[in-house]
Image 1 (spheres, rainbow, N blue to C red):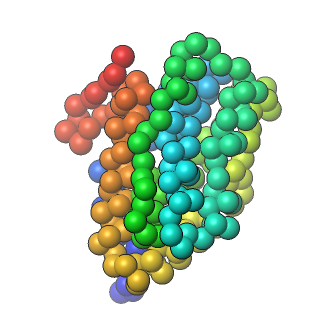
Image 2: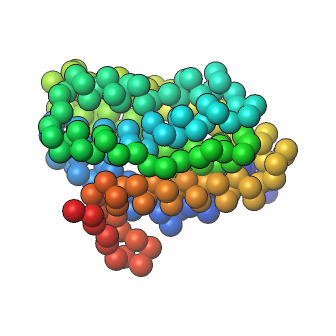
Length: 206
């Protein structure tokens, strides 16, 4: 049996939260609308923007790697294209508190929270193209970040994780990944999403 990859370990260690996060973010778009899509983008932005700001300050981080995964600017452009209501302006006025990261291992581990969403979001893009094509034609920059390359970038992310694990130890990365996933869950609750906990309870902020 081959050695377990760092990415596989992170998936196993954080699996308890995946379904709740996916449901909180993607569930409201089961029957997509323009307003639902705007709210989805606002929630992602409030976490992604401070994450990217913290990542670029990390010592020895691979900037080319970060650039191809940059999403905050794309989300902002999409929201401007769609237009915003007062409710959405209120959401955008807040940000999750993230970082700074001590080293590359901490940064790459924390990134797992959003990198894991690449493939589900690519699947969502395909569905939105069919169900709300006009909305997506107006605001598609974020949704096309990983168009046709989600699996390739997921693999590259795994390669960098394995390198960081050799230098810093896998436990450091696991701890940071768990912290990132937990931070994303908290952010979704704070943003008003209903997030099912591991004990099947739900939490909602009005």
